Length: 204
Image (cartoon, rainbow, N blue to C red; front, side):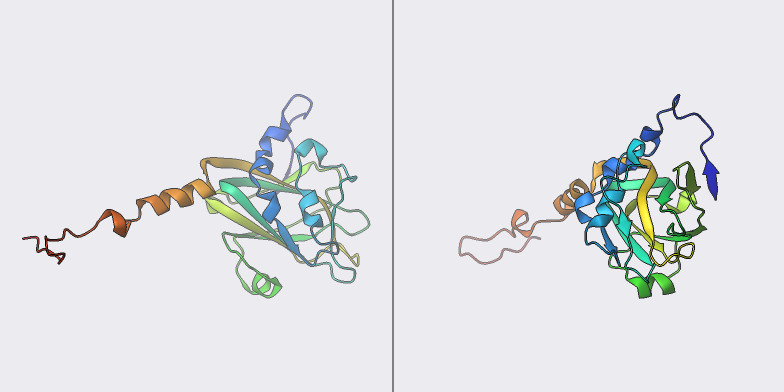
């Protein structure tokens, strides 16, 4: 489901709505079938910069419009909606499928796996549309994979902006991992008492 903004962005801080930008682990973002390696990172930016093209954009290899974008987060997040700004002349993505907490997905996986949700997209050149998620399915998301399987008829797909609206948990993912590690018993902290001869002693 796509919806238009129901307010004037001059009177409303839309950038705060798409606050998950700050929780994306940008150094680990990647894409399959991008024409320029690493260019996918350029589509994640502040909402007010969504129409800027000077910083580059994501383009698929010519003759193959399919793209697969992997987005890890620095903390678990809840995703309410997704916004995608594509290119003109048929280069905008026409379909989007989402997978959560699945690392290492390739095109074969994406085509054969059941997505958490999928959308038919429309050309959104001005960045005024957002696609609502089935919110209950997008809780505790550590990473998100977006599969753009086709566009509107061009030889390549172009994406200038991907925005994610939602909220993050308070704990960063590395902190959560540390907590899990600390609650696991450390054998050195639980030595079995020994007797004077150095053997194991029985505890009655």
